[in-house]
Structures are given as structure tokens and as C-alpha cells.
Amino acid sequence: MQFICAVAMSTFGGTALVSPILPVIQDALNVETESIGWVVAAFSLPGIIFIPLTGILSDRYGRRAVMTPLLFLYGIAGGLTFLAPNFETLLVLRFLSGIGASSLGSLTIVLVGDMFEKKDRAAALGYRIALGQTASGVLPILAGFIAIFGWQYPFLLYFLAVPLGFVALSLLEKQTERRSVTDKAYLGNVWRAIANPRTATLLTIAPTLMIVNQGITVTFIPLFMSAALDASAATIGIILSARVVTSIIGATQLGRLTNTFSAESLVIASIIGLVLSVASVPFVSSIWVMLIPSLAIGLTTGVAFPAFQSLLVQETPDHARAAVISTNGVNNRLGQVLGPVLGGVLFGIGGFDLVFFAAGGFLVVMVLFLYVSLRLNPLAA
Image 1 (cartoon, rainbow, N blue to C red):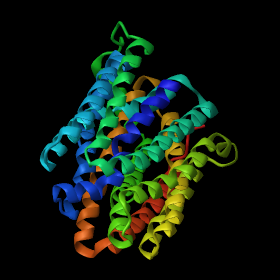
Image 2 (cartoon, one colour; image 1 turned 60 degrees about the vertical axis):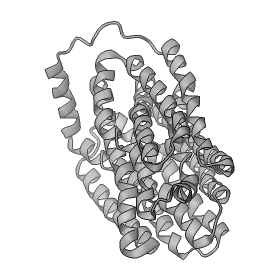
Image 3 (cartoon, rainbow, N blue to C red; image 1 turned 90 degrees about the vertical axis):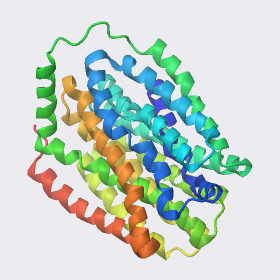
Image 4 (cartoon, helix red, strand yellow; image 1 turned 135 degrees about the vertical axis):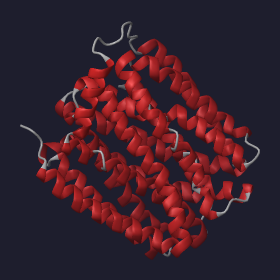
């Protein structure tokens, strides 16, 4: 569990380190506002290709054979971004580190599914999110202050993932034989699991949350604070990190919450809260008032992510777990890529107001869809 949480904390830094320094990178490399989101999107894009591949390989050849090289690539390519001389090179290195990070988050969920059951599983997923969010809270502050010396320096923190590669080599069990089921039968099992109507519905939640999280929280809230509220990189890092407090509270209490409320209800209620949080941002006129939507975003996402993941793991058969969770990872990455890009398009059309109001409207539509679909396809007894 300690290893799972350490990897989660490391991979959460994929965007947490970059978010508060986006305005600094923009100024240093002379990047247009409509294009700066590609710093986030380039990191997320390779997951669309590599997550399903590594998920299949993990089911067939074991977790260690996949996680170890990914950790090394993530740490080394991410750290070498320090040397990027221009925007194009930065994007290439972000893409390479994104390949390394592609399946690490999904595979930590798979390991939780392998190790825990029922209520313990929900609690474990909550603690995984909580510690990952702790990294998301500490790293933006650290990156904001380190960026005082130059935009490149925060990227050196990615090298911390390299020691985890050695831990994976010694800690995870080596699978000496390929699983006996044939490739055709395995793929058939995966397809049946994904085609299940309830599972298919659950797989829409990750891109929904990530489009808003990456397109709004990570990308355009920092830009809004810089342009509209004249906030420094350090102040942006503090405001963004404030949400981690409530996110940790929500995530660590998931085990208790699921004793009273269903995970479905928690997901839907959290997204409704996220609607109100995002739509309120354009009305903020003071930098410290931004703490209110920031704390609300932290609480809602802190509950929504592990509650949804618990539902998905519960719905997924053991023999296809990595492939289905990896499919969710692909959807997650699609949301990460689309969020900043769509945000840039909306900004070009109607500025910050359109970005935040459109995100709120999108979430309302998804709440209605999830409510109807999950009730039409209830969990089997």
C-alpha cells in the first residue's frame, strides 16, 4: 500500500508541478494563451495509445514487468525537461514523460483491486487519492517558489520517480508464466466486461471529471488568477493547493461515507457540487476569495474520484481488471487532452466567462445522463 501511494503521489505531480508555472512558461517562451494548454495536453496525449497496451500486457505478463520501465521513463524524461531550450522541445519531453506516466495511475488502482475487497477497497482507494492529492497540494507550492529561480527548475523534481522504479523491481512479484487463457479468449472477456451497459456508463465519468479538472482547475484557473487578479506564481500555487485540504478530507472519509450513502449517490452529488464551484469562478473579484471555489472543487473531486473508482473496480472481473481499468485510463487521458484544448477554443471565442460557464453546463448534462443510466442499469445483486 505504501508503494501504491508513493507511485500515486509521483504521478499526480505530472500536472501539479506544471500548473502554477504555466504563466511563467508562457512569458519565458512567448507562448500564446490559446496554445499554453498544450503543456498539459502533451503530457496526457500518449496515454490514449499506451494505456490500453500496457493494461493488456499487465494482465498477461504481470504488474512488475510493466510498472518498472514506466517509472524509469517518467522520471528521466520528466527531469530532463529542465534542459528544454524552447517550447517545442518542452512539448516533446512532456510527451515522453507522459508515455512513462501513462498507465502508472491506472495500475495503482489495479493493485488496490488485487489486494483489497469491498469496504476495504473503497477505503484504500480513498487513501490513494488523499496521498496523491497531498502531493498535488505540496508540489504546486514548491514549484511556484522554485520557479522564482527559473521556469525550468521545478522539472528536476520528476527525477524522484526513478528510485520508485528500483522499488518496483524488488517489491512486486515477478510473473514467471504467461496466463493460460488464450489471447482470443482474453480479449473476448475484456470486450464483454467493457460492453456491459453499467460499466460503459461508469467509463464516462473519468473523462467528465478530467475535462473539467485539467481544462479548468489546472489550466484556466491559474491563467484567470494571473490575468484577472494579478496573482504571482507563488500565490497561484498556494490557492491551488488549498483545495487539497478538503480533497484529502473527502477522500479519507470515503470508507465511512459509503457506510451511509451509496457510491453512486456520492458521485452524482459531488458532480453537482463541482457545477456550482466552477460556475462561480467568473464572479470572483479578489485573489483570496478564490479560496472558496478552490476548496469546494477539492472536496467534490476528493469524493468523486475514489467513489467512482470503487464502483468500476467492483464491476470489473478479476481476469480482465487491468484492461478495463486501463480503458478507463484512456478515457481519463482523453479528458486530460481535451480539457485544455477545448478550454483554449472557448477562451478564444468568449474569454474566461465562456470557459467556466460552458464547463458548468457540460457537468449538468452529465449529471442527468448518469442519474438516468445508472438507474436503468443497477448493480447486480
